[in-house]
Amino acid sequence: MSTANEQRHRMLTETPVPELIRKLALPTIISMLVTGIYNSADTYFVGRISTEATAAVGLVFSIMAIIQALGFFCGHGSGNYLSRLLGAGKMQEANEVAVTGFAMAMAIGTAMAVLGNLFAPQLADFIGATSASRADTMAYMRIILIGAPFMMCQFVINNQLRFQGSAMIAMIGLLIGAVMNIILDPVLIFVFDMGIQGAAIATVCGQITSFFALLRGSLRGANIRLSFKNLTWNPHHIAEIANGGMPSLMRQGLASAATLLLNRSAMLYCGDAAVAGMSIVTRIMMLISSVLIGFGQGYQPVCSYNYGAKHYDRVIEGFNYCVKFGTVMMTAAAVLLWISPASVVGWFRNDPEVISVGARGLRWQACALPLMSYSTLSNMMLQAAGKGLKASITSSARSGIFFIPLILILPSLLGLSGVIMAQAIADVLAFLLCVPVASGELKIMRSEK
Image (cartoon, rainbow, N blue to C red):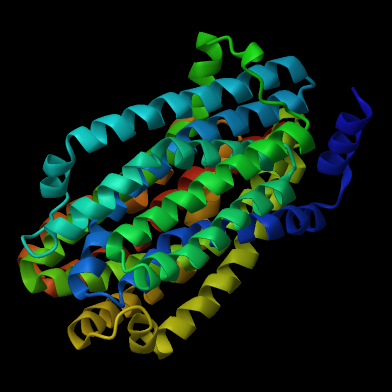
């Protein structure tokens, strides 16, 4: 091993687990909050334009979720695998996996940008745009799709840096883009009077800025170097990336489908106001869960590296520590949301009808928040350990296996109340599924210690 790799090996295999996770988690939490800010800044500023514009951003979020899903598919898949390769001392193969994941993201993102703009009118109709919100939806979506290659590739580089233990570089790269987005949003929307198009341009400019900042950090400050001379298109590497990335694709892809169905169901009962209200709830929950996911992402390099090095006791210790910390954190957030949901929703859009729908949605979500820690972290542990099938099942539970049937059935029985409560019920059922799946895998690791 080189000196840098020896130091990294000692850090990941010898540092006390709680201390190591806290060290890696802080920048990843900030990174995830930054991602949440990307997704919430437009909602906040566009909320000052109109309810229809707020609904349009919520509708296009289902497209953005697909882009994110594919970015995480390539990023988590390559990051998980290269970390296990590093744990096994296979540096050259890790370099090949890194550039393969990057190239896959660039190709998929470019295809989405081209095809998405060619079929933008059909996409707008498919995601549920009304006659009132269709023009805003089209204007916002076309620009967002242009940024798809940069958005996907930034997620790839960010995750590869994290799984190498370079979480600080990953955080700084995303933070630079978020600051750019937040500065440009009010300037382009209000000063230059560009409306919803200004919000989309600000988002894409932020993504491009993050992409180049992360690329520079990857080339200069990481153990793995992205170089196309290492691109082999090895079928085994692609299969491993798919195995490690499929849980993320399932989780994010089903989240996109869930958002689409949620918007369509909400539209039936209160039109754009209901879509706007539930879109705000979705963004708020993303901000809260981003802290939990960031903490879990601080655990994932510890999990994957030590799993590859067969230090199963450290994998188990880290999982238990994260679940306890996450449960306390989510319980505190649930209490705060329950106390004053209307004021939280009103911060995004001061419309009584929007606030009424959003406040009810937040209170239902608050009921299930404490259970999200175990569900989320069990999925991340299984994914980092390379248990693709089990991780795919647990990642599909919240937004797919349970939510999709519920959002199709409950509104027909309970009307708007069914729309509002569907996600919370799905979260409880997902928890009940994750407990035996994760416990079984932990039992296997204990027997192999």
